Length: 475
Figure 1: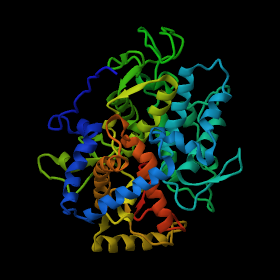
Figure 2: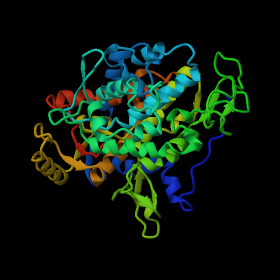
Figure 3: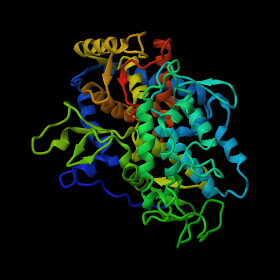
Figure 4: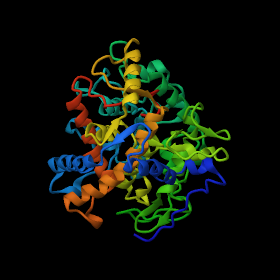
């Protein structure tokens, strides 16, 4: 692949909001807290670095169990795998159900539609929720359950305003969907509650508004239109001749962006995709979130472990942009598989700072919540358990998303995942281009390992060792 020029992040002293919304800022800001973790100087956790290699060995054992010796077969972390729960290739089946007149561009566009909505609905569903597939009759839970539910809703046309094309997502279709319809689609009820239902419904409504941005999503307001068409220049696709077909789509963004290189395959810089997701989807995040000078930052939070400066309040903020990163990981897969797109600088994405990866660090003993924080979190759990429908067994500490404990925990998770990748590759004897990528380790090791430890440690609820009181728009 040719070298691609990657733009530098905005200067935080000139435009702190733009900097904190950049992908570069996630790793750079988290590192300030992670450096404290390595010195056991965190505000809310004790750190036992003797557990680091044990944690790495556990991750390696999971990877070897499921993939040895063919580590190249490990897919990158993304939504695609969740759709295949139970060993059923649902996305391949979906693709084969469409007539041959639907070309690869439109097929990719439809998958982007599906994956974007499915990821945004993928906040933690809670221990009590389950989904019974209308197609197989099988019952699924958590992320896989939400994936199957969103796929079946997509195929039924619940996100489309065009009855002749049910398999699409558009702004009008989303705007017409009520919270009650979403609840029915997810099979949510008093006896089968899904966490953060109102938050998810609000997210879908705000997504409908965001999709009215024609620059990114076209006149029909489809997520898939971010892919774009080939308008005035020829782009060479893998296994395809160059095309200048003007009929493909009404919008041209990613593929005809000036930063996209027309080589044997399209090469899209990761920051170009990031700009579409962060800028195009900015209206979906609650306005109550952290902001600077009126600019909402999304999944970014102040933390007491960060430097503080009265004249530079941005310095106390740690950005994570977890859902946006999960979107990026997930949307790259169909573009790569169907169109052969290569994303330059994809290594800018970090390990996802969420409760499975973070829970792994707690359940292995690498991180231990300090005594006074444990006491505070347990009291919060017991108070919350008095509310109808809230978990009341296998007591663990509970904190809100914006609590300093959670922000610190997420920041050190980003740092530890980077270092675990180096250690895991070393233990597997992999180096250079043969080494696992961060996305592969997340898929085959840390995320899966975090979930499996939760299942063993808390078999009734399978919840993480620290619970997060979420509104359905972060986790």
